[in-house]
Length: 116
Image (cartoon, rainbow, N blue to C red):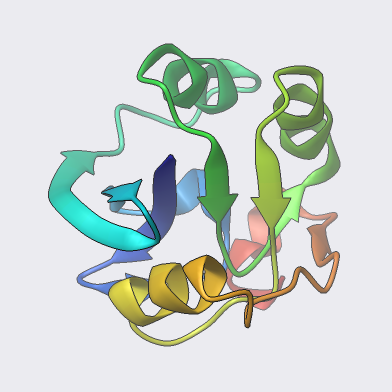
């Protein structure tokens, strides 16, 4: 399983599309076995969900996310977890252990992305 966390300097970001980077955690047998950071290649409608799908992501974790991105992730069978906060690695670990559940946070105003 491959988990992507939308982050800013190791912290879960409040808005998926405006994150600084994606922290990617490769998981085998419920253990993180590999980690990498990929810079956000840019926020364009529809681009990031397809980009993450192309690199094999199965789960995306963020503080908030726009409905359009959620729909694309759903079409790609990528699990969306919103409402997360704190350290990215802790959020990934909580998901792996079954202790991180999406609260369904949807961002409606891109210009107010800090207030999702």
